[in-house]
Length: 442
Length: 100
Ligand SMILES: Cc1cc2nc3c(=O)[nH]c(=O)nc-3n(C[C@H](O)[C@H](O)[C@H](O)COP(=O)(O)OP(=O)(O)OC[C@H]3O[C@@H](n4cnc5c(N)ncnc54)[C@H](O)[C@@H]3O)c2cc1C
Ligand SMILES: [Zn+2]
Image (cartoon, rainbow over all chains, first blue to last red; front, side, top):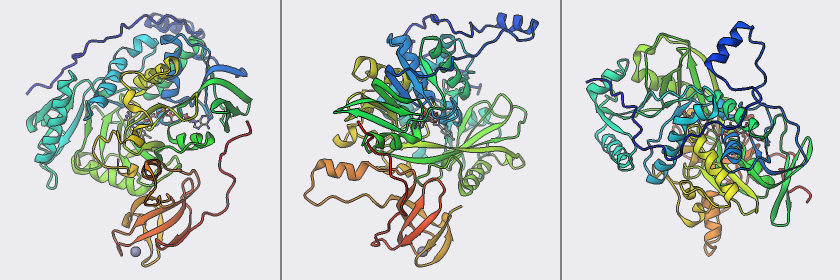
């Protein structure tokens, strides 16, 4: 069977990709400019974003310069006309989970409301590089989930059909098609033979650092202040309203404070006297030494903790499940590393002699139902964006847009209204796999 | 690798255990309202620091135990039976409401 090469946009882009109106201080990036700079020794480049010192007051202060914080700032300025915005980051920009993930984007969810939200994100990824004038290496190489039992086949078929009903691309593949797509996979491994796969052709990968840099550059060009090395140490309130945040630069006041701090959400929320339905857990990632092209889809094993893609440098980028107990340590433990390697070798024994070059961990905001939270809070003027679990990278464009919408309009974005905090108290939890309130199991 | 001192079996590798979450969540009174029950089910303090938690020794005695562990360093401070009231060692005050 020929390799399915569907790169069709089944859902038309509803939003016109308007020209990147704002001018970056670093000028427009283009192939012509790269060529010309080559002739003059690359002396003409300047900083991609402005290093700001904070003013005492903003209309909106966003805490956390990860993907969601930066995207929120960018859309506030460019979609909603709110330029009086600061993004405050305790470390250097982009060293949180936005720069630690395994870069996978997809919208192959089960619940219709989640499929719609994540597919909106995928559509925003599809036009993002033009819009930001930044090469984020969006690569829609397809994501393939393998199944190994008849019941898994039924589950994936149901999921694929659900997606297709919403005009989102999904294909069920038989064994032969899987073999053609990923020849390295041992289809007949003794324990979990592969019966087939579930492919989303529009899924793929995006260069994660470039996402942080691209949004930062475009937000900065649109007038947003990005302030690094500025840790928020407490949240001030005036009666029932938020007043601002305390930082090493002193009090910074704002009408709206937005927390987009991923794994540190509970810590920051506690500063405002709130407890969240969140636990913080570590997820690890691994990169092998570079090899020649062996894998051109994102592949997920259905019978163990293992998923993998190949980077443009040739390294296999892979990961598995979370370490399994609350942790704020940005490093992983060995039992999960061993578990991931074992699952990978069951699936692709041919990789046995490949060496791991690098390994790291990120602290993630695991929500109690496994779905994200974009919501107002009981404290007026305090908005949260969190609960992304291990899947918040793909959601950065839609998460930023929805959070900006909530801040600017005072009401949820229509595609993200289900992601409110109240759902836990009212019994509308969004549990994709029906696992219950056990974040360490999601 | 955590080395967990099971009160019944002695020190064992973490791979013999299954984590069962925060052990400091108070269970509401039987007549308590929806707000209390939903907080007990869903809200967690999620400390960056000492954490009292449940572990099940699935690969050993299959009993439930309580552990006080630090969520950054993974240091284990105390272990006990389920009914034990284990306390975290004193620490800097948690982030609180700052002066208005
Ligand atoms: C190993 C790994 C693999 C992953 N793989 C994928 C994947 O393949 N696909 C996918 O979709 N998702 C993936 N994820 C999840 C995804 O990376 C996250 O859900 C997402 O990046 C979180 O949002 P963010 O980018 O805004 O967070 P972050 O980048 O973590 O941003 C939060 C920021 O807040 C800052 N901060 C914290 N406290 C304070 C404070 N007090 N004051 C100021 N700033 C503060 C932090 O320094 C940080 O920069 C993965 C995560 C990990 C760890
Ligand atoms: Zn035991």
